[in-house]
Amino acid sequence: MKIGSYIWSGWMAFAVAVLAASAIGGAATSRAQALPREHDRTLTNPIEVAGVKIPDSHLARDAAKLIRDAEGELLFEHSTRVYYWAALAGNRRNLSYDPELLYVAAMFHDFGVTSAYEQSQLRFEVDGANAAQNFLRSRGVSQADSHTIWLAIALHTTNGISPHMFPIAALLAEGANMDLVGAGIDNFTSAQLDAVEMAHPRPPEFSERFMQILYDSLKHRPQTTQGTGLADVMAYKDSSFVRRDFSKLMLESPWTIGR
Image (cartoon, rainbow, N blue to C red; front, top):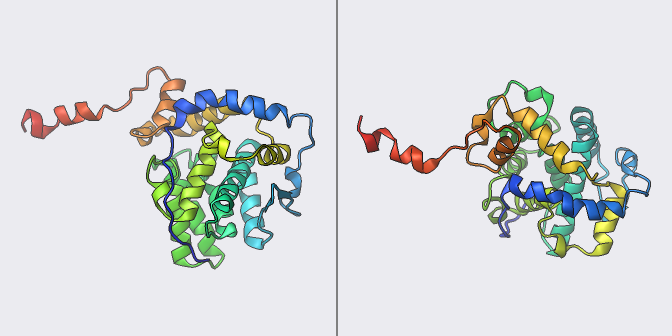
């Protein structure tokens, strides 16, 4: 499970673009709506989608079952598509990455928004990263590789950082961004887009449902969204939410106004 390094493009601003994502996803999903869903096979007999397969291992199957049970279908399907977009991007650029670790990272990247963390005061990315690291360590994965996945998940919403790290971090952020806002959609062929949509359709109402899940999981810890695109989701769902103004913080700091 050796992971190299790679530099790639920045992570887009999160929720502002999510509001426009339904326009992208709606047209794409229309091609898949009449087709049979294949996701029930992913836990027992992974299918090949656009030349990419979910790793057929105990680790991958255990991760899929855990995530599916905890997150429900919408997030599980999102996480599965994130894996495919990430793997397709990695293959297109001939990156060296461990598919099994990339799959676990994709499965756990939104785990921090589940009901298990309804009292957490940490950023949801950190909760998911901690859960993934504990999962991997409990199954004998090295501390180094487990911490690598911790970093990939913890930083996947941090604009401009993940793309400059190792391949799994860059690909996880790219895959999530692709599924949420259609970033980089032109880099995928029509055949690849159709194949992923056929296997794991993105529902037309995905954007609103996803943002509601985010809001429900973050409204008790709004301070953790400050300085991230998640603050846009909070403002969209709650008109009383106030984004932090860093300039104001500096101008009103004890050093500026005097102690």
